[in-house]
Amino acid sequence: MHGRELVRSYYAKLGAAGLRNRTRPHWDSAIADEVIAYLGARQRVLDVGCGYGRIAHLLAARGYRVTGLDISEPLLHNARETAVEKATPLPVALADMVRMPFRTASFDATICLWSAYFELVDVTDQVEALSEMSRVLVHDGLAVVEGPAPPASDDEVPADRVRYGTVEGIPMQGYCHDLDTLRQRCAQAGITECEVRVRVWGGRDRTVLTFQP
Image 1 (cartoon, rainbow, N blue to C red):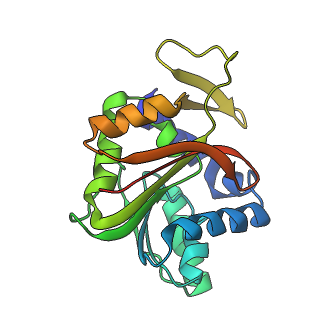
Image 2: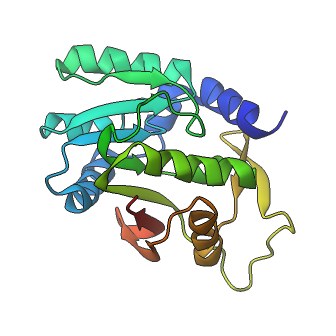
């Protein structure tokens, strides 16, 4: 098993409870603040790889019109249940980020957090996902993609940049992006201007890519 099927299997086994155990409410609140600082007045937000609604629910509670997208039906089921409990609207779509079921220029912002984008190990999928994030944005929209910090200079990176490992004993995969590979993917996706940097995000160093269509 590899590629997107491995990702689906991982999230089906770990589940919303397992993901919640890997974060803390104060971390999530700090990350929501970071996201809002980027969003500003942009109200229609697509959370790409929203999972169980970890950040989407926080943004919706603060007045943003959030739509979630994820490839994991179990996680989306939990996101729907939480939306009902909180009485906060959160429409969700079961779909892959490389083929989004939304019209062009449907959102003011797209966000893709935690490590969702970095779980795409096929370069073509990486390019398509960025292209889709750009396509669904209005002309002055903004995409925010966050993930692991680049490998350290003494870190041995596989030739294909794909690492396989386990989380909570469950097989998982990740692509070892650095700042240059992310810039390259943006260029391949037809995104002419982007900013990518390592910054403190929720209390730890993370890579943050932003771009406009």
